[in-house]
Image (cartoon, rainbow, N blue to C red; front, top):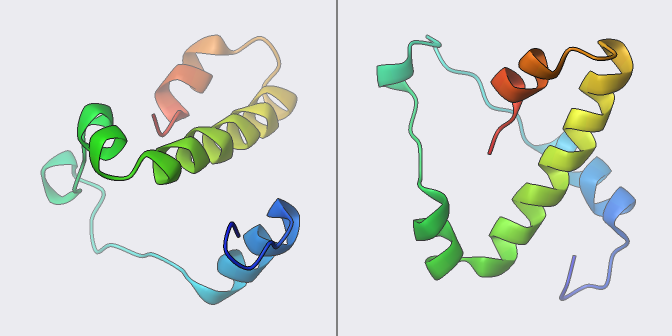
Length: 78
């Protein structure tokens, strides 16, 4: 996005259609997590984009479940 100067919407559609992630389980011990501090120190631009994607996602959750702030908190990726 930054290097090729793609608009965010185009870049999002491109990666959304190109990549998918499935896991055989959703148990917490099977899912990898990285701390915000670690990502922020190693990959600051990536962290900015993660926050942006999370914001867009939570806006969609809020539209589907108005006023359900507990759901938004549980579903937030950050």
